[in-house]
Image (cartoon, rainbow, N blue to C red; front, top):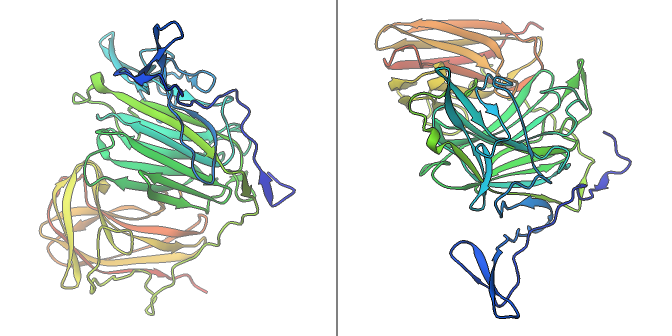
Length: 475
């Protein structure tokens, strides 16, 4: 998309919507049902619906909103999307137009997943709505307040797709903006993600609550989408900032900021099962499988600067000895729960801890979880340049014979593997392992060395030291 000027004024989206404002009636008093009792000239009283006043935000104009007042879905904004089971991601649900799956109640849009028995087999239905062809827009601030359901296999999402998915090509070339996704088996963590590129790339931010969960109360999810940057917030906490995406068609890269320089629309759904959350089990409570949305508000600035450039890719420099790994000998104490240098992660029922002592890192586990990455030690921000050859070296041992998995992954490039997942055998004596790989992928400044210690039935303590990552490309 090309523009004649570096500044473009954005007109309001072409939709027939009116902003809902509160009734101004000095003779009205709010009752317990959220209605007002108005006094007529004849002295009689009548009930009037109370409409929510959508607040203004400094620097933005309200483009459109839905506060879900009343008891019917506003179909001037929302479409009920119909999809058969298995349409995408191996999900199990059928998306229907039924009022059982999509309805407005008590000021909330409810997307409900249901399970019924069909010929002795569980059959799942659920709800999905989108604003395609009704309320699309290019750039702005999207704010959604919602509460997610809890339960294995439930997968609520608030996300955006382009109005014309074929403009740059089918997914992922077209781009995708995921404002919020939560997995029902762990509703303490929310994910914000963008997908794009050819080949597929993604960038993701997460936020984990110290107290409570995203299913125990309503939370506010926001994306601020501008020509050269997107910022994602959860409850006013910055979760992710991205500004270095790309896309291509047939190997020819499109001009930045493609593909996120075209109109998108909002959609919300409650999926059941699929590749990421896994399928429901006997613990999943479908009596309470309800994704509740309090409001959707879309704001837009008067104008946006369209003269943006993709920031240059910055690569980590090696240390004096050629090693790209920071603190590879574990001589320095450091925080292991941040995203700098080494950090230790637990997922999917993994329980354990890590500590740096006496020039080594010591990893203990009480439960190895359900995935290889359930117990994980990583170091990110490693350079992986097309055509270059890299060598990974480390010393490792365990309190007993067991195994672990090592790889170099691409968390922002579709999780491809530069060094393939490789199982290594551990014993009680130190062993040195060395691996080499040559990259034939796009340059990446965010390669990630991973030690994965989950899902193989072992909880024996592991010790690691002398970790090196070197570029051994011949001149």
